[in-house]
Length: 210
Length: 339
Image (cartoon, rainbow over the protein chains, first blue to last red):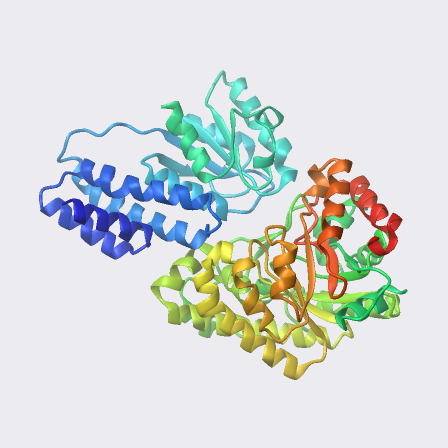
C-alpha cells in the first residue's frame, strides 16, 4: 500500500495525470480510503511542489502539470467517493481574481490550482475585475477570503478599494494580495490583511488561519 | 561619439568611449507625456513622436520600436482589448485545437492589424533620426505568439500531451515571426529584437527549452540571417542561466539577460554575443537613489570591456519615476566612460 501511495505522489509531481487517476482508483479498489489517499498520496506531492516553488529549478510548467494531475485525482476519483464515506471537513471558500486594470492571469491560474488542490473552493472571477465585484461575489458565495492578483503596480489604488467596499457592508472578510507588483508592498500600503510572497505563501496563510 | 557608432563599435567588440545604454520604456514615456496608452499603441505619428522624445529626453543610445505583445496575434485575427492603465490583452484564444491552424494564414505585415502602423513608424523614425541612434524593431518570438493564440495554460498542457501538436504550432508561429522580421528589415532599421518571454525556462522549463524550443529558434535565426542583414537580438526574460549555452549557439549578435542572470555567467557563456542587461527596471519605481547608485556601481564592477550594453532586462514599469530614471542616467553620464 505504502509503495502505491509513493507511486501516486511521484505521478502527481511528474504531472502524469492519467497514471495518477488510475493509481488512485487502484488504491480505492484495494480498500484504501479517500482520506488516506489525500493525506499520503496528494498532500506530500503538494509539499514537494512547495519546496520546488522556492528553488532555482522553479518553472510554471511543472507546477501546472502537477496541479492538473492533483485536481484530476480530486475531481475524478476522490469527489466521487466522498458521499460513501464520512462527511469531509468543510474547507473555506475563496474569491480570486485579477483586479481592474490588470489582465495577467498566469499567476492567478497557479494560485487557483494550488488552492483547489489543497481542498479549498475557489471562485475565479477572471481578469480586469472591478473592486466592488470581489465583495459582491464574496457575499453571494459566503466566502471566507478574497484573493487579489496583480502583476502591475498601477492597480494599487483599486486594490485599496476592496477593503473599503467590505467596510461599507460591515464585512470583515480577510483580503490577501499577491503577484509580481503587489508582493513588493506592505499590507498596510495596500489596505489588505496579508501580502503573499508567492502562491504557496497565500496557501499557507489560509491554512494558518483555520 | 555618436550613439550609432558606439553601438556598432560594441557589436564589433572594438573600443568605444563607453558602454551604450538602452532602456525599454516606450509606454512609460507615452504616459509621462500625458498620452493615453491606446492612442500611443494605435497611432503611428504619436508613436514616432514618443520614440523621438524618449531618446532626446533620456539620451539613451538605442531606440526600440515595439508596441505590445498582442501585435502578432491581432494580425492573425485575435481580438485585442485596450485599456488606458495597462498594455492591451487578447480576450480569448484564437484557436482551441492545434488542428485549427489550417484556418490561419501567415499575415502580410504590410496589411494586417497594427503591423503596418509600426512599419510606417519605423520608416519615419529611420528618416528623422538620420543615423544618430541604433534603431531596433521588436517582434514576438514563436513561443509567445503560440501562447497568445492558444492560451498559455493550454499550451503548457499541449507540450506534454501532444508534443507533435506543439511543434506544429511553433512551426506556424515561427513563420509569423520570420515574415514580420522580413518586413521590418525593409524599413531600414539596424536590428530586430526577438522578444519571447513565454519561452523562458521559468515558464516552460529548461527541458522543454532544450528539447523543443532551442532547435526551433536556432533554425529560425539561420533562416532569418540568410534573408536579411539586420542584426538579430534575443530577449527572453527570467532566469535563463541554464540555457545561455543554447543562445550562444544561435546565429545572432545580441542577447538581453534579465536580473535573475548574473552578469559574469552571461559573459562567460555568451563570449561571442553582445550582452545587454541586467538591471531590474522595477528599481526605477521602488528603489531609493542610494540603491540606484549602488546598483550602478555593482554593474560597473562586473561589466566587461567589450561587447556590453548597459540596460534593463525588461520594460520600465508604466508608473516608474522619471526622477529616478533621470538620476540613474545622469549618474552614468557623470562617471563618463563608466570609470
